[in-house]
Length: 461
Image 1 (tube, one colour):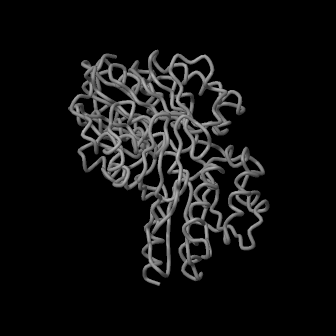
Image 2 (cartoon, rainbow, N blue to C red):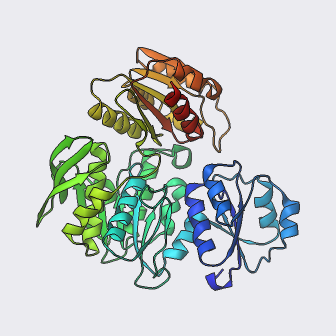
Image 3 (cartoon, one colour):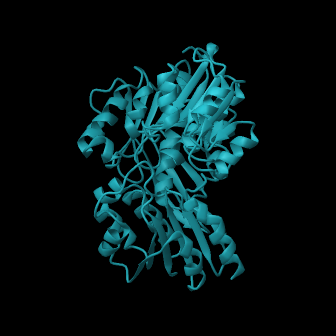
């Protein structure tokens, strides 16, 4: 379906972070936008406030009453929506044009200059950094992001030139279900290729094969900015490869890193310059490494080093990426989206760097039965870095339970001295009775719904 023919857009899974960005895009371009999601959240409330209709029940009678013309209605769905979903089946049976989010993103970016950021970890922060550097430097750009940026309070940035051939578009490229293969970027960043989504790929090798295909889709004359350690996917690509790292020998890397009052101070070394005097307010050396990739991408589109330096100093990060909820001398409360063992390790290590002498209590909600099963040892090893561990039940998302795969199974593997399983209903009372010093809530399920109740309860203590 050609964009000019679209009058209505219906999104199945409209409350997802990537889907909601598309909803906002089509709403901003004058289409009538509506959609279904399973759960009401703060994000769906924001969409409703923006005059987008959001429904929370599978209702084909309602779809009939809307009288959506199949010839002018685009239906976008996320792979998280089951194929047995009543509305999905309705659209299939009535010959509507159905496209995955990734396909639509591919259509939107087809004519522009695209910077796509992929990777098992770090892609949301890195893509948001790139978008912020460009915006801060006065470069007209659009961005479709996988998180809510703290600087712009949105997951969608719309430039004035979107749709024109000289427009610049920053997108987060999702590896789930091989979605990123719908993109043909001019610049690609690959932050990591650790095993994940093995329910889709089967094993690490097949996942890496998809990353290799993505790398090969970078346009001829383009650039692949790849983290050291991803050499396996760099072979036979049309793009020029630029390697990056934190401190290792690479084409661009950080140096002289120091920490002062929660800020990182460092330099970045390239083949031709040393960019010193950089400041980043995001905790964690992994975010310094993310900034190295962002700097490489920004320099390729002509942003000056002085403007890069200014932009990084003002970058506030992404919601639910090491987000401080309480920061006082008595108590620190941080919320993070980490849901993979390496993300957990990076997050916990970053907290340790900032608060080396304080007791660290972590509440973790495992995400997906398959991920918990496949990476149980890795999760246990990372969570054992905490002083106190509280596990919630596994958040199933799109999955059915797997026999023997439980939070209890994971708890048995954790070696922290203090560990327990807690229900969501019992969590706030449990935390209130503890002598907390640094609290960390982590997970990609619905643990974010508990953040505000926890914050309110602890501030009353």
